[in-house]
Image (cartoon, rainbow, N blue to C red; front, side, top):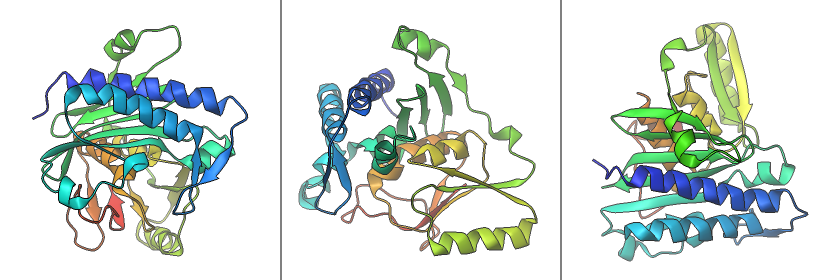
Length: 262
């Protein structure tokens, strides 16, 4: 069970972080490299600061991509924590294709139980509480967050496409994923492919726009925690390709196994 007051707080944090990202996105921004050679922009840092300030009110510890160097000896005793990616899809941000998101998840005892994913460019926001329901709302400038929340729509996976549909990464399509798609064509005949950036792929699974999302390339816990909660809330799940078990969180190694979301 999660405290109900955490839902609007996390939604507000995601939208405010999205506004901070858009300020940079609409300017001439500079790109740096992180220690792992992936790109970092001012938008990452600004969004992280906004989320950290908002969620600090909850007294729940926070693990963020921009603050990931917290020793496991400290984290291992956290029964509840926020896992946050302030800007998921940095490559899409740099390409200016709009397919980047703010990800906020609540994890309890290693399982993701609540997630928010916000796409600042479109104003689309997905959220879900595992075991309950998943929703989509649209925030537009000039409309209050409260009004947008009241107009939210429950996600319904009953109307899956008639043709078997796979969603895959726009920037990280591995040879193993390509082989999986070829095998799906043998099993299902005609197969539709959708490419998308960031955690929007998991939102497509939750919304019933695709049957499966295979990810046979590296991801970190903050890449999947929010989307995983939303997929679970919509009645699906994400399974490790190695163990067949649901992905777990706040591990000693924050790298995920390859997985299949469905």
